[in-house]
Length: 268
Image (cartoon, rainbow, N blue to C red; front, side, top):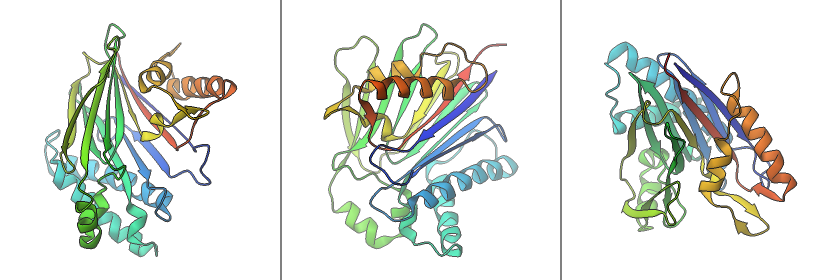
């Protein structure tokens, strides 16, 4: 049995929450989040458009193809081209689609994650050990799907000459493993549910927790986000509301918008 829950909250320094997250169970259990670029206009709208079109792609794929063989580029291009049309019909600029998009779903007891941009995936195994995977970019400019439909912006992004940075750490390790890849490296993963009963997908807001100017460690934040007393009902919302309240009482705040989605696998 797979349970899902989601949570999102505006960052301390933001006027509008540009993160958005949805979940559902048709055609399979899924969580989709988008994190709008704070320097582009109306990305709170673009984030919503991207999430709902990603959901439509999953429904479309179910009717026309066989799960779970989803092509990373085909899915991304289908979503962004349809999102461009939707934005135009709403009178929005193309730049409103400057947003990270993360699509995660379960199929046949495996988790699939497709990330377009930056973000964090957190896994907890059956023994309680935690592993996180963080994707960021060397010049803090994520590779958004929207660049693929705008040649001028694509050229400007390419000329930045930046790398994709892959970082991972496991409970007990003193230092994180890091590697660099080309900015267009396909960030997609498959994780067996039985090996990782709990999985979180997070916007990069999870890396923005600060006390004064001191950045808080992602592993310590991950441990707090996974400290469930119960996994019934809205288990993630309860845990994060409690954790954020305690953090705030101790002067720790997430500066950026925060969105988190949780999968919880339990054998029948």
